Length: 220
Image (cartoon, rainbow, N blue to C red; front, side):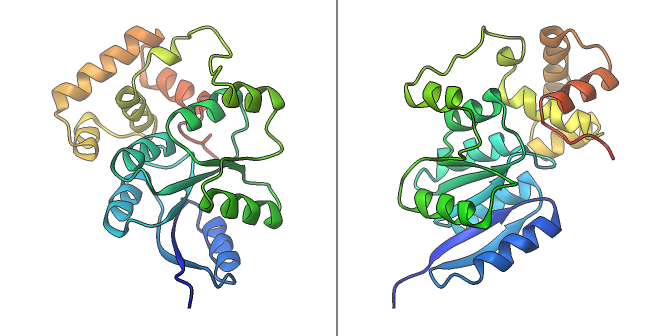
């Protein structure tokens, strides 16, 4: 019997996660070995189980998909990662591939397209949803990844983005320090850097900016 490919689903919406499990459980060649509903839980689970593939939502609580992607690829470069997301902008797509994504699939894709994306990535190919603009694909494939002038956002480090996300989610400095395993003093330094780089001076402004950049979802 051919060995099954192991897979972890990282998705914070249970309804969508259950839908993915229902589809994938019908495949004889894939075994779902775990699931996570926030970024920090995801990294711990992936490190422990070392799956062949991860289906990863880009917008995750506590630790965003790009941060998860970078952490996993740094430690487990052979683990295939397919991003499932609502974001179609040039910035999100290019950031994802620069961070090491193997595929990028839009959430409203058909079942057939999702299965094609999974098969392509498992075979070591790069997959990008047909709905993504030709400009993005050409820019990525030709390694011309700078479609715009360097912005304030591009000057923000990955750690600062993680802090910004948690600030926008309502975490205190102490909670942020515990989640990211850094001191409160370091959190304060990152917040000061964000204020200086982005010229945003209160939590409301930082939260609005985080929503604009897709780090957190718009409150319902």
